[in-house]
Image (tube, rainbow, N blue to C red):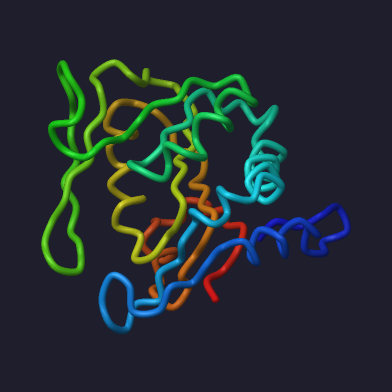
Length: 184
């Protein structure tokens, strides 16, 4: 969680958390969907979200910000621009033209895949993986594996929201995870 210099929660976190709408029973019964579209409609909360990530990573030798489709594309580019890093989109299959490398991963009910352009990252790049939410951790693990196979070092994963009850953090094999808010 984002903390100030004195170890207290950053005061901006409350506004960010309050701007995230929780939609019960979406997309199916029993799911409490964390809807960031309401955060995006609140310019102050959106700016504070990006600013908190930028403050954490500026000057930390991050050369690549890798955003996971689709909501990682919302937060990743402004972070990359602000810290002077390149942005690399990690996409679903058959969305990128040209040569790609891919990483399959297991979902609760099936499998999925992330793809990245060959040559988008170089050996020795220091990568930050960005997404809106961590649930089970499968997508973040696939993103880390993909980047590491290309020679990058993943320094951290950054998410706006964590669903701690799904224990996704445990799947990250010790990689640091920075989260702004826990689900409500």
